[in-house]
Picture 1 (cartoon, rainbow, N blue to C red):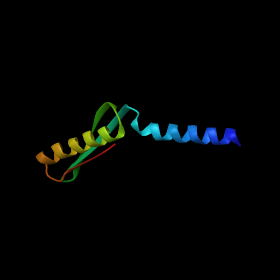
Picture 2 (cartoon, rainbow, N blue to C red):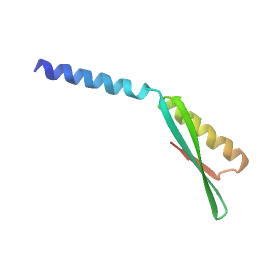
Picture 3 (cartoon, one colour):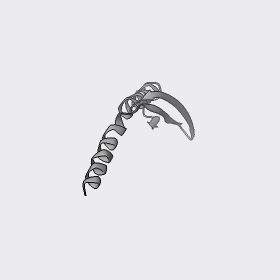
Picture 4 (cartoon, rainbow, N blue to C red):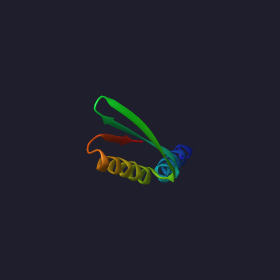
Length: 75
């Protein structure tokens, strides 16, 4: 029983630490103009999920400042 509690606590600690790990992400942006669409991929290196999401949102905002509402980005 004691081993089960130790394993459970260890697993929960590992899961809690996982979201803060820095890794590489790819932000894919799709721009639609008329009937044409293009995909552009942006590499986001050494970031946690919050930083990567913010960077990806910034790419979308920058693209939409040129072509309003024509670009959506996601990780």
